[in-house]
Image (cartoon, rainbow, N blue to C red; front, side):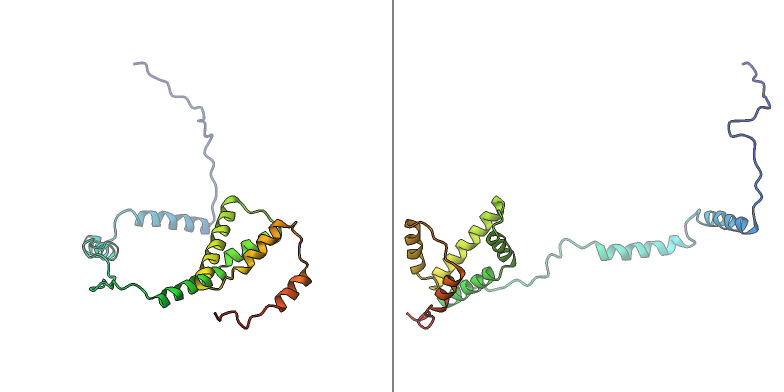
Length: 181
């Protein structure tokens, strides 16, 4: 092998430059070096204390899959069907929920303003309105008279009623015999 002769040329980093540092800078650098030295190994006594801490953490997280649910299980199954009055009550509750549905009300307001809804939203609105109509028929709240009025208006050219006409029609409604059959 050939011997490489060493030269005295300066390397790529250039000559070393000496910086004079203040006492506070030296102190802070020494603290950083001291922290790095202290953190090298494990904590003292970790062989004895670390296993307990780890097992306590795992006991809280890992559950035995054999334990199962804590939910109570009925021992006797009730096979009786709900009475007609109970079913009617649930239909009334469902009707009330549908009428108070905030999302449906917001979509109906948007439709009243003339805004076009997407196909999915329009389908949802139609389904909910149909369900409301079915529930009202089931509960006897829907009269057949409005359907007759709609058929008459379909045969004639549709004339839009003014707000005053609608208000007069509402004020003249007979609510006395509404729930009586």
